[in-house]
Amino acid sequence: EVQLVESGGGLVQPGGSLRLSCAASGFSFSTSWMHWVRQAPGKGPVWVSRISSDGTITNYVDSVKGRLTISRDNTRNTLYLQLSSLRVEDTAVYYCIRPTNNAFVDWGQGTQVTVSS
Amino acid sequence: QSPLTQPASVSGSSGQSITISCTGSSSDVGSYKFVSWYQQHPGKAPKLIIYEANKRPSGVSYRFSGSRSGNTASLTISGLQAEDEADYYCCSYAGSSTWVFGGGTKLTVL
Image 1 (spheres, helix red, strand yellow):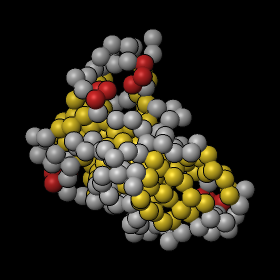
Image 2 (cartoon, helix red, strand yellow):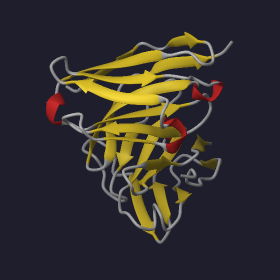
Image 3 (cartoon, rainbow over the protein chains, first blue to last red):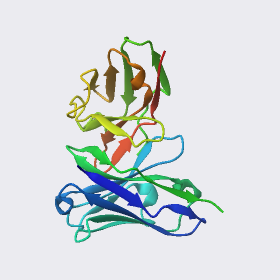
Image 4 (cartoon, rainbow over the protein chains, first blue to last red):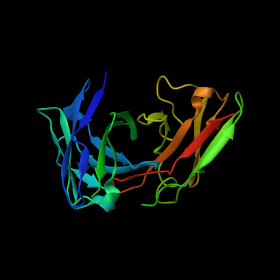
């Protein structure tokens, strides 16, 4: 059974930083591309970032380029998202996702990030 | 990277059919078959119900079907049941290794 467990969210002031983690199990993590998607309260999901299986290719939505960094550690089966220079509009639940067939098949339970002074 | 356009809400009586539209552009829905649909119940993560515009993942009810024509994709739910009441989101590959979601549609089963 695929399991994705996010952690690391919390309350942070504008301009602050956080590192989110996603512990993966139940599938071959080292051969899977992975994504982060976020969802602000009462809003639709927004695709944020993607990383290749070996970590050499990364992609981002324009609104987070330069502030969010996706990475992975295949020895630990863990996906990361470093959030920096956080803004109020970054407040959301952040989901770690395993894709299949160009769709977002397996989702974690999400971790809440709240940016507020 | 503008969000795909969905109606804010739709409703239908138990047993009826409803269709939710998802309108994009020639840069996303109109160019790629990689349109997917997600069902989200309150407090839960979204769940994939349609991929590649019209394919159902294993375990998803046959009552859910999808289609795509031009810049618009559609999700049809037949034989509405109380448990279908949820938020529904479409998503499309948008080129250049990016994806775009819709704003969501709240389905009410009367």
